[in-house]
Amino acid sequence: MSFTNAPVTRSLVYGLLGMSIAASLLDIKHYFYIIVDLHLWRFHQTWRALVYQLCYTNSSEVLFAAMALYNMRSVERLWGSRKYATFILVTFLLTSLLGPAILALLLRPLTFGLFNYLPAGPTPVIFAVLAQFHAMIPHTYKYRIATSISQSPNDQFEGLTFSDKSYRYLLALQLALFQWPGSILGAVIGWVVGYAWRMEVLPRSLMRWRIPGWIVGIRSPRRSQEFEGLRRRLEDEGTPTAAATGVEGQTGIESGRRRTMGQQVMDQFQGAF
Image (cartoon, rainbow, N blue to C red; front, top):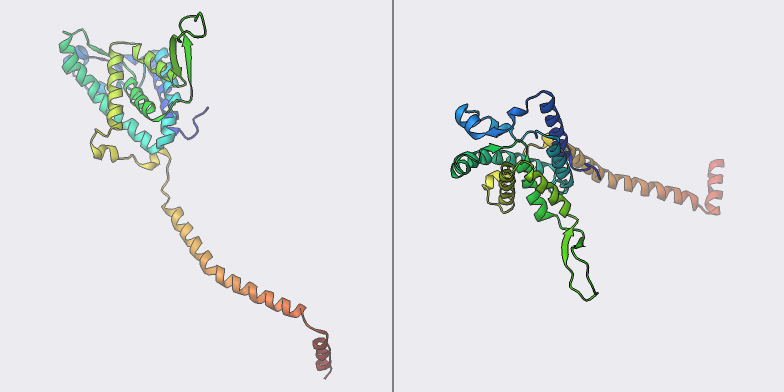
């Protein structure tokens, strides 16, 4: 149970914790949520759309978000860090634009100004990851919780069926209910964007694009491949020569060891004359 083979998830968790603590210590939490009529229509602070997902404004949301990201790190392990980081970046940009736009242009007019607040925090990104987790990761086991006491063994079971993935969904559900209805809007948008990526509804060029490998610590293997190819060529060229030298040396040694008694006597006489 660690961040092994999940460096992007580790960076997300540590970054979320650090940003939330810094926003609290520096007393700048009021910059990370959106009130449509005040921030967007009156003061035209459109930059809030790009920063409202950087941190949460209370410790409970930080705790549940960190736990949710940690428990979904298997998505990064299946995809690889580069694809996962690309997905996080694309999802962040899309949800940053869609959330405030849908709230300001659609939901607020339909609710006559009652739906006016979008809370801080990367809840849309977490639900986009949850959509991938739901589609990719199978459950390991299931268990049932009875809601009534059976009177006989033949009675039909009455209760709830859960799996080992259920508590991950409960973490995300609690995160979506903290500051509803704004947090529910972010959760729905994140889930839709996540499944749009999954079903390849998004533009193909956007889905094929990948961030540079050095951002996630992936180095180019070109130099190592060149040295490996050179080493193999040298080994292939040196193997026949070494084999021939070894055979010749072994033949000379064997011929010296197999000299007969007559050959040795003749050598003595040749040396005397």
